[in-house]
Amino acid sequence: MREMKIERIELANTGDYPIGPAKPVIAGPCSAETEEQVMATATALQRMGVAAFRAGIWKPRTRPGCFEGVGAAGLAWMRRVQRELGLPVIIEVGNARHVEQALAAGVDMVWLGARTTANPFAVQDIADALKGTDIPVFVKNPINADLELWIGALERLNLNGINRLAAVLRGFSSYEKTLYRNPPQWQIAIELRRRVPGLPLFCDPSHICGRRDLVPSVCHQAMDLAFDGLMIECHNKPEDAWSDAAQQVSPAELEALLSTLDVRSNIPAGDLFNRYRSRIDQVDAAIVNLLAERMDISRDMGQIKREQGVLVLQSDRYNNILSTLEASGAAKGLSAEFLRKIFETIHAESIAQQLDRSE
Ligand code: PEP
Ligand code: MN
Image 1 (tube, helix red, strand yellow):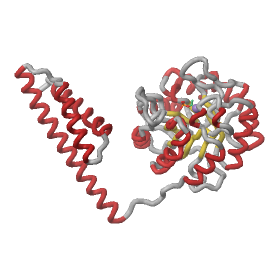
Image 2: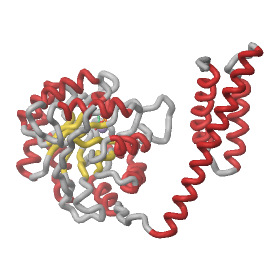
Image 3: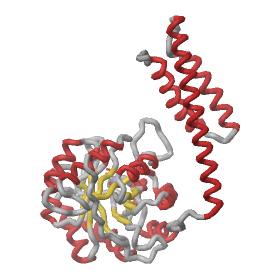
Image 4: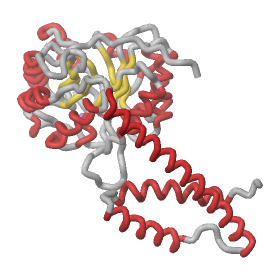
């Protein structure tokens, strides 16, 4: 695959925030509901100096029977926001028809939602409908934790000449109930940054959190992880919102939040950093040696199991290992979830080594 060609998206806050103009904040309601709600929210946001106004016109709802958006009627309200308030606007497109209507209405930017990014047919249709235009396109992560699918969607757009691209981390759905509605899994966005350097990374704390009280802490984390901007759901009366009511913040709450965000800008330097870094490098090298040793032992064990007709998978033994390690890890301040993840991976690799009969 050729390298992606990425161009800058000109987007800046005009408000006086500690995060400055260079970390654009896109804000607005989950859904455009009425002309009054759109104008009231956008007026407050424009006064506050955010970079752009978002609203969903067509809403991809998980179950039928929920509010599915006002549809094309909302496009005229977005035009009013552009014309009367001078704010750039961005809406979600989920298919080629949405793109045609959005382009005809002159929206400034579009985003692909998490359910759309997960569907290559839909992404290709959208990319084809956008061909020949050069509006900025924001691509949310797919609902499932699949980086290739996310990159694939960006590539489909890029191959059709869309160069002003940005990625938006909105978290990944999980079957288990967790603190977050969609746990962020920051490491996936960090890996995206490594794989596609130069691609702006935005964070959508609203869909990650699912509840407004958690939104500030996720915004702080995103800033500390060098995200380039935020997309936050903001409604003039959040508790009355027709969709995602629990996670939207009011304009006043957003303003308070933005005044507490700041950007760490110091370049790591000096002895202290170098000392810590070299200790980490040593520990990482030791971990690699230990893993190699463990896999050597596993392969030898596999040989013995084969010779003695013993099953590769010994579930009781595995459960014992896990509970012993979780107990000793807890005493050292390591979370059970963290240890379980690591040892599930190590165990899976050990099993794979024991199944390998190629030697
Ligand atoms: C939204 O932004 O309102 C939305 C539907 O987002 P997502 O695709 O991230 O669920
Ligand atoms: Mn929403």
